[in-house]
Amino acid sequence: MSKDDQQIAAYMINDEPYYAAQGEEIELYEAAYKNGIPILLKGPTGCGKSRFMEHMAWRLKRPLITVSCHDDLTSSDLVGRYLIVGGETRWTDGPLARAVRCGGICYLDEVVEARKDTTVVIHPLADDRRVLPIEKTGELIQANSDFCLAISYNPGYQSVLKDLKQSTRQRFVAIEFDYPDAGLEQQIVETESGVSSEIARQLVKFAGMTRNLKGNGLDEGASTRLLVHAGKLIVTGIDPIAACQGAITQALTDDPEMLQAVDELSASLF
Ligand SMILES: Nc1ncnc2c1ncn2[C@@H]1O[C@H](COP(=O)(O)OP(=O)(O)OP(=O)(O)O)[C@@H](O)[C@H]1O
Ligand SMILES: [Mg+2]
Image: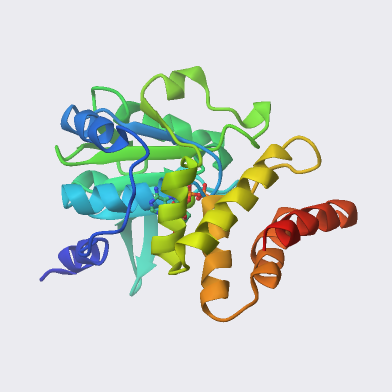
């Protein structure tokens, strides 16, 4: 196996990641993928976007190359740069160029966090040209037909300044995510953490109470991720009230009054 093949093999997902569909998102993704249209996932933190991407990469049998975007991320971090290797300067592909060449799925997580120049780079890839210009080498890479670009963003907490531009968002098929409905969320918490269905039901109920406090003292309610964390602590032997405090309440807020109010909610359930 060449070094490139080895790198790609490392991005393959061989075992099915558990993913409980909320609606038609799997079919929608597959249809967009077949048509070479990039995908935009929207939704709050911890609602299953990354898990969905892992599941889709497994389903489509493509390597998944995820980049967590941050405000220092430049287009060179995505596309590549010249590096000095053994006294020689050599071009090294970044994650996006690698995915474009090998026909992988490139998932840019929290894309609005990245610097503005990165959106310039994805535009020609995200329309029907499907090309990646590499300015520094003068190369224009035509994307492999299996290549897929997916980006995620959380419309809730990002500021207007960091909103996605229309010229960017209007290139994508958008899939909206939210916390699953109670029955499905209970099933997810049970499966992911191994708690009993009764405890999972109570955790979901608790999450619903915190979600009602969004905008009334809390910036966000408890995500599915936090419920899974609490469930795991409970399975490991932690008392449910303490598990909720550590895994959920403290993760949601630092405000002493809110902490107390949310703790009282969990104490009323367990
Ligand atoms: N539909 C689902 N099927 C299976 N597991 C789920 C689902 N939704 C959420 N989960 C569970 O919640 C956890 C968090 O989900 P995930 O990491 O995909 O969130 P996310 O939307 O990517 O969040 P962020 O925006 O913070 O990255 C997963 O590890 C998994 O345990
Ligand atoms: Mg994620």
